[in-house]
Length: 299
Length: 97
Image 1 (tube, each protein chain N blue to C red):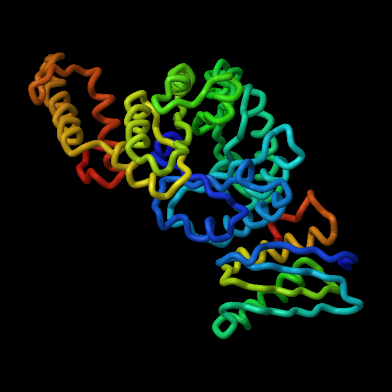
Image 2: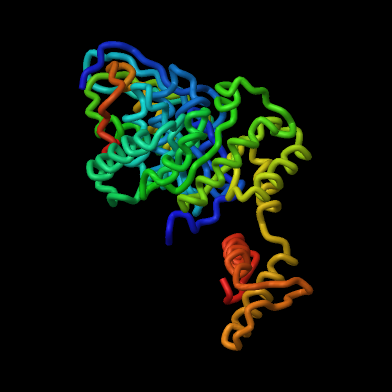
């Protein structure tokens, strides 16, 4: 399966310094966890977090939840050891913070490959995800998105992006519109996934719902999260509705049934449909199947 | 390897463990206090002894205050304390830890 075919609606950050957080976060059933070695970890606990990371990866069964590791910045003397611990532990992927150029990804890729050889992991098995956190990163989004076969996706990190943009965070998210638009265009052009930034006001569930709906409609595949209580809501918004699933089935079936008859344009559920609709309908069914909402044989 | 300085790792939060490692003239001693000592005391001591062998620790006193930590956390805290005592920050032998 291509790295972009898995469902990744939610990826929740976990402070790897905190034993209580990483021991059983799979119970909240996110699609992915991001075991954080970077910003959440105190400077004098980086070593403790890294050992906790390695032992957690080795010994805790995350029951199918994909395990990503956010390493420390490429401008630190920490990230190379972070990569070794993550790869030796068997993490599914590594999230690069503050990625600004394609060469950042390629440099990490080389170190990941070396670690895979050193620790007898299958070479090429560790995915990468690039976090874009600055204006330069957004400008380079397409080059970054197609920089490596290992690159599963690109992710917006709004805290540093807004700071370096000299903007202010707003409820409406106007200041992120340009970055989000450019990112999703770049991701689709490069054939990788796109993930939105965290929503930090964890008590404002109405605002969270609005933001998830917005980024879903923009085309994003998922969202980074900071609270378990955001997981279920994000899944509900990203999941196709029963009506959407039924319509997608009808579209695919109708196009199949009429494909041999030379009919190019059809009416399905009262709407005009042509071959261009099939890809979207198929994506809806694939997502529904991955989410456990569709048991049919059209996905 | 012989250690010459003391080091502390971990916390006293629930699900965590705090490990103090101190130099000892000869051999290894383990002092364990655990909130789940009755059920898991022997298991934790054996885990610590196995890891001490793996790490090659020859002379140290380990004082472990366990607050219900999983094995992975106990190992991580012992490793952190040991390498802090050695002053080693890089080039760990991941894969055998």
